[in-house]
Length: 303
Image (cartoon, rainbow, N blue to C red; front, side, top):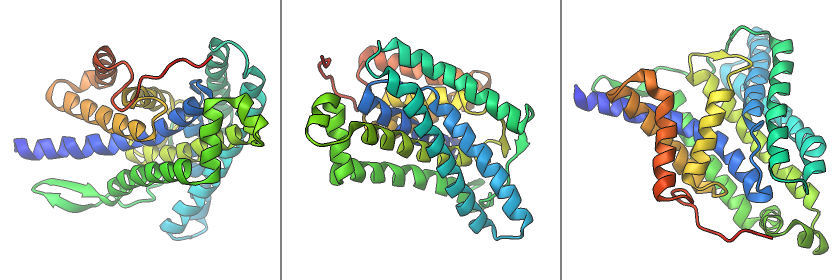
């Protein structure tokens, strides 16, 4: 019985941690390029879930297969989030690029409230049901413990996203431009790279990942979507990014998994009432002993 409980908590922790990891990748990409924390990224995730909910409801009513509905809804949600994130970068963050670090942070918080208000006007205050686009039946069993297709997809997506981003950053022309821009925006411009395009592309890639994370989170958290759904997972994803070493792509995934496991085992063996507390306790402990995060490296401050 105890072994089954352990496996159940392990599966649940890895699945939830994988969702945190997907969101954390967006945080860590933007920080790696600009050195700012885009707290409005959580609301981008929420918009992705809400758009996917609306599109999938329309397509299901039209009689399309669920797999086709999922793919089309995800595509539309990703495009919507990419457009939103581009507008955020272009009109909110770009004019503040040379401002003190605190200014973009305050702007990000303001954007979060603005996006929440707009979502509330469009979709209302009450939670709305999110269609079950992936099967929730058990496919692999350990005694009474099972893992579903949806959970396998969530974990697989987090790994694929991490590998895809690593390939993008390390092996493509855009990735080299990203690395150059993260070193020095001004010098990158002198070398023939348009830093504005690189930064916009970074925001848009992170937004696409957030859209997918929002869909998976909505399906995994009781099948509900609402205008405030991005706040807590967004905060925990930021914790995951810091925990793994913010600016480090594998670190975001490792941090997310560690955070999900800490929550699951803390809730299972201590108390579910303090589930949200365990994430921040783990963060404090790690930063005391390793301030740069689990996979982060100490670097000198740039002038």
